[in-house]
Each structure stands twice: as structure tokens, then as C-alpha cells.
Image 1 (cartoon, protein in one colour):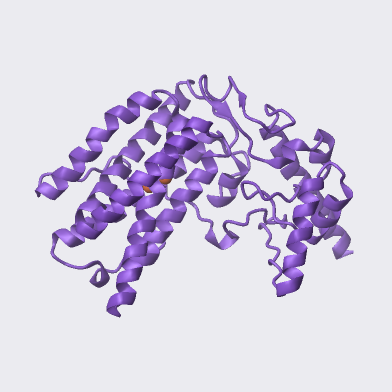
Image 2: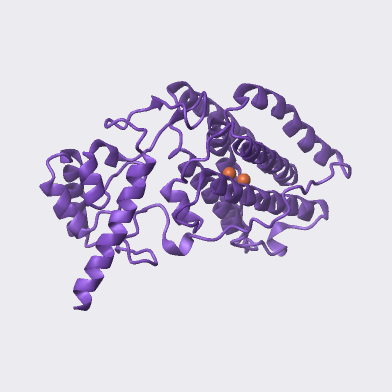
Length: 354
Ligand SMILES: [Fe+2]
Ligand SMILES: [Fe+2]
């Protein structure tokens, strides 16, 4: 009896999930390709990012999400596998599942099927329910570190300020595109800093003070921002090319900068995060005055930030901006540690500070 009731609840939850997905992607053609979409942004393209869009609408409404390997959509549970194999509209998906099944059987590794609190299957591979959190949107978004104490601070401030003009000119009112490309850069410093501190810890046989985890968490958090925006807008080929060039340059430049002066590197990121807060504030204002439509939030954002089911893009911008404000504080704090002639390893890091 309990099993029957449980199955019913699961079916209802999955139907609601499928309807939300369908509602979110009604503007997307069956091919799932990029289209010019007037209702998201006047000059930006909309993108659902889900291979479910290739399935007939009836399938989407009546069945749970198809397991997909693209954009971390759905985890392949046993029922999903059987359903996918029976569905001749998802031949490619079935092949992928068979491959997964063979690998799992060979190594004896079967991914644990996780669930949301409502009992529906956890669809994400890239983060677990334990990795989700409610962002602290009460954080002061107007805080600014005054660049008056040293030439290092002034150099960091004016470098970031010099970058602001061309970036604003390039993106203008295309806030989603701005956010998307900004996050491809924002995810680099935490990874570089975390990696270098990790190597230092190994090399010198010393503790890190928690800074390795803090910086790697920051990088992962930034990457989740990117995974969120890519559900809203798919980058054009020239934007991908731009990201390639910028990443190649920025990664190496930041790597060398961190080796030369971690103090300057963290201060630079602190100011970069201040700029991120500012650009997300402008994004919010564009939504509030109606320049940017306030569409439903991507499902990945609802799960990652524990947002309500009816959350919108505005809610997502609020939590992302709160994250950026926390990154700002973490990096200015790290720079302050160096300012005071101390080392990060002796100054406990704010682990899991979002
Ligand atoms: Fe970010
Ligand atoms: Fe950030």
C-alpha cells in the first residue's frame, strides 16, 4: 500500500517537473537549437539546454526527464533506462545508457540514486543535495574596499576599473550574455589560487589553513553560475572563441601574478567581484524596469540555491549577486592577511562561506 502511494507521489512530482521543463522550453524548437528569442532579451538568444526538447511534447509531459549527457540534465536511474530503451525517439540516449551500464557492471560502480526532499529523483551529476544551500541575500552588496593604503591596492583597483569601460561597452544591455562570459573568467582565480596553495602545502609539508578548499569552492560556485546562465542563453560561436582566447590569456596571467604576489592577486579578484556585484545589480534594474523579461528560473538554479518552484530569473540574479559579494569579502580578506604581513595558512579560511 505504501509502495503504491509512494509511486503515485513520485509520478505526480515527476509530472510537475516535466510540466515545468516543458513550460520553460515552450519557446524552443523541437531541435533544441538556438533561436532568436524576443522575449528574453531584445538582442540575446534563448536556450533551454535540455535534450528533452527533442522528444515529442506528449513524452515530455507524461514521462520523467530523459537521461542526458549534455549540460548535466538527468541521472539515469533503472526505470529511466528501461523507458529510454523503449523509446525509439531517443536512440542516441539509449546507446549512451548502454555504455554507462556496461562500464558500471565492469567496475562494480553504480551511481547512487539521490532524491530531492519531495522524493523526486535528483537529476544532477555535477552537485549533490548536500552541496546545495540558501544564499545569504542579506549581505551588504555596496561594500567597497578603499584603495588608499598601498600601491598594490591601487594597482589592483585601477586595473579592474580600466577593464570596466571596454566590457560595459561590449555588452551594453545584454545582461545575460555579460553574466555568461563574466562567469567563464570568474571561475579561474579560485582554481589557480587553490591549485598553487595545494602544491605549496605538498611542497612545504604544511597545512593550508583551509584556504585550498575555500578557493576551490569559490571556483566551483562560479562554475555553477556559468552552468545556470548557459541554461538561459547558449553562447554563439564567436563568444566561444572569445572565451577560449580570454581563458588562455587570463589563466596564464593570473597564474604568474599569484606566484609573484598573492596579495595583489587576491586584491585584484576582490575588486573584480565588486564589479560582478555591480553588473548583477544593473541586471536586476533591467529586470525591474522591464528591459529584461523576468522568465522562470532554470531548474538547475532552483535546485542549487534551494529556490521556490516558482522562482524567476530575478531570484537567480539575487542569489548569484550574493555569492559574488561573498567572494569579494573572501578575496579582500585574503589580501588583508598579506597586507598585515601574515600568511594564509595561519589565518583560518572562511570555509563554505557563500
Ligand atoms: Fe559568479
Ligand atoms: Fe564571484
